[in-house]
Length: 490
Image 1 (tube, helix red, strand yellow):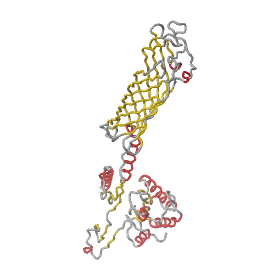
Image 2 (spheres, one colour; image 1 turned 90 degrees about the vertical axis):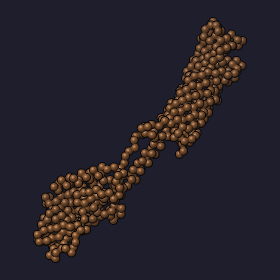
Image 3 (cartoon, rainbow, N blue to C red; image 1 turned 60 degrees about the horizontal axis):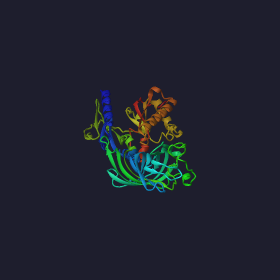
Image 4 (cartoon, one colour; image 1 turned 180 degrees about the vertical axis):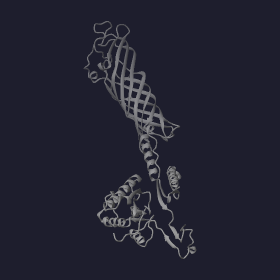
């Protein structure tokens, strides 16, 4: 029956430990064999700290995003020379990949480095070079330039970043030509074409942009904090550097004959903009895109249970009333001392005796079975280890001598305070109890009279909030499970 009770109590304790941390509060009781656990403190600091770490990581990841933009741009090619006066327009594609880094505690500013692939063109339908050194040419001039540029928009965000909000930005632009062609298509005769890098087009240019946009956060139902962003924006661009090559502007490019049907038609390098002075690009862009914050890929918040500090409360001290033929047990709260007969012997048990008290009881002929004696300062160990200090040997030698003279059977129990994790303290208490066990065996105690057990921080005798209490809890207990009359002759 006792074994069934122990199993039942163990199940209750296990189930109680599985109760969610928020359901446990100070004062809750958990029954156990020989007493009960009482929750004396619920420390939620680690729960709060873990949540704060998660929030800080989320905020950090939410400030970095990557995405794409795509749209169209309308560009104007501005010529400043005698042959190609005025402005010519063209429209084409634009596609970009970017990273965005949000700055400042209020997320007002952002940097968004991006790489764009685009195409610029110019069309001159009625291009007339009659009377020039190039020769007699009338027809169409076409310039198609394939480019990529690197931009660094500095963004000023307006409104609440968690909602739909507009923004404005300014960006320096560095562009590079990597392909394309310039063509002359005469009204009569053969077409002449040259690769853009073999013509008079400079391979790079510098420009600036001013833009406005709006960001639309889209939140997920499965996790309302996570989102992706839709971007809509337009910008105006102004070229700063000339796109004519330096060679052409210096007059070193030379002049090549172009005549319909001529011997060199379409064969020699072609410099389509004769007497070059200056050519720049300006334009307008309209784009839409998606941004993906890195917080989208953050793992779920780790669930941490609050640290529960429990105090072990054994059953109340028991008064055992001995009569001639019976033993009646009463708790301290319910016994009526006046009813005890004069010939009875009243014995009040304590949680933990001193070694000298145990010896004294045995010498008086009293039973010590079921009692325990504790060592708080008599047995000490090296810090954080199970090495017994030499000053403890005298006390342990007295216990060994006592056990050999009385035939006492003892279980050595190791206990710790609550400094460190439960697993760490359980292991340390095992090592220290084993060290005491080994020492006593080495002093000649019979193995069948000695065993050891360990409990870590699970059975405090005092509070762990003070150094004095922790010192009491760092103890070795000796539970007496059997003993004979003390033999004084041994």
